[in-house]
Image (cartoon, rainbow, N blue to C red):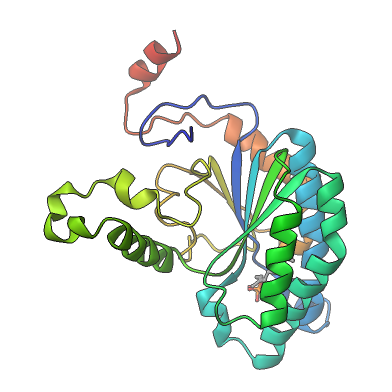
Length: 253
Ligand code: FPP
């Protein structure tokens, strides 16, 4: 049973169970070094590898990465195609390693505009790792939080057409079970690198009660130590979920 932060008071575990990351700053990392932006994305893949390993070792159960937003199609065509090539390469090269590490891969987002080869690799990688449960790695690709809420609404009405005539019967749970990450608990910790302090249409439904951590470090510079600093900060937070401090103390007794 997935515990939603809005329903119950989950413990503030020593390690966040679900970490969601916006990996920002690849382009600026490269520009600072007089390199093409695409070199920053290639370095970004190495940081993804480090993050997966570090989260696995520290006992994080769900790691969700925003790899490509619905808005990223607006980038120059060569940058978009390089990003696609990096996804393909990562899927071809890294799946064995994910398998060794007990990582289950999920990809969420509207995959329909992606090339058939990429979609096929995604399906294969998801199938191959489907038996793993140590760490659930979710890559959000062509994902947008508003898209997710819309697709969930459509899916809900397809599954329960009677709700269209009785809107008052719709509750949060009815919609939430159709969100693309309905199988995962809501993120405990959100991290955005690269200095911006925005959610940028990431998991907008699920981030309602998440602790938000922002760092100026660029994504390619993120390593286990940088993640530990975010986890350390997370441990200092008191998560009240709309309740009072006294209620939280009582709940823990
Ligand atoms: C943001 O940096 C990063 C992206 C849009 C792409 C993230 C992709 C990767 C890290 C590589 C592939 C990932 C996987 C899971 C294989 P930016 O380009 O917006 O940087 P900027 O803000 O400095 O321009």
